[in-house]
Length: 339
Ligand code: ADP
Ligand code: MG
Image (cartoon, rainbow, N blue to C red; front, top):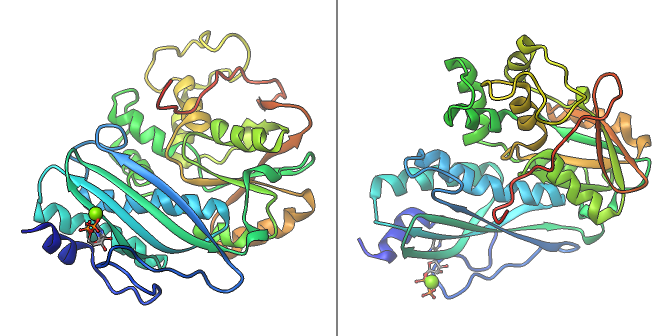
């Protein structure tokens, strides 16, 4: 099969929303009146972001999902994508599954694949996504104000917990793992939430590198600090279940002084999953306190829990309080490829 047959068979679909799609030297795109383009790129590298034996359907889903998540965090409506893909070989069955996963999610969100590049090489997947948003309504990282409330959607830490299980750092039961694995392999980008937050949120980011790291980007861009209540962080039943039996003190002492140190399922691991785990793809955002009730309404309308986890304060940095109001000792965390 030639490169062009491969593209035609697996990556060419109708693109009624583009002036010109796959097949020429470039696609031709036009944003709707009153909108600007929001453009973002995310790359998934085999061995870094997924394992060589990853399920190709789920990989197709995730390749697009992580990009949709970036548009959601901007309050942008997704329109188009391009896909650059390096493949060790033209594996028909793999490609069929990968593109099925990709297009299933694309269809859900009205995204059209309008171009890309296909080459032989170590497996590597790179999507550039194009959305649109009225420029004044784009949700930037820089808009948080002192006194704003801090919110997060869905649950935190499930994907990191699933990964910890795969890496043998914790032992989950089969149903527990299944519940968390969905978060890891099939994240649901919060596009509808991003759109609903236009005009309400003062800043937003998607949580891909862990809550503290990503909230840290908002704080830095907005030149403010934050106080977070650990007990307010939204955690799934599975994660909560794996915390409770240990019943350890969550605060005090040095980070390494926990009696659970080194024990699989120790509180440090779970705390890490919630605060520093990657791959959540939830939205973290700030909004004036006067919007509190409106945001709870949005949560009901979308059927997506929104948790108010703290507030924006003057100063710099982030403090996480435990139930008794003491600051947790949190080491700098978040995934940095070059650290
Ligand atoms: P060029 O040589 O001009 O870079 P290519 O031969 O790479 O063109 O690609 C031919 C057409 O197929 C282009 O329109 C390109 O955007 C599209 N294309 C290539 N690879 C992909 C892919 N993986 N998914 C979608 N479109 C693709
Ligand atoms: Mg090319």
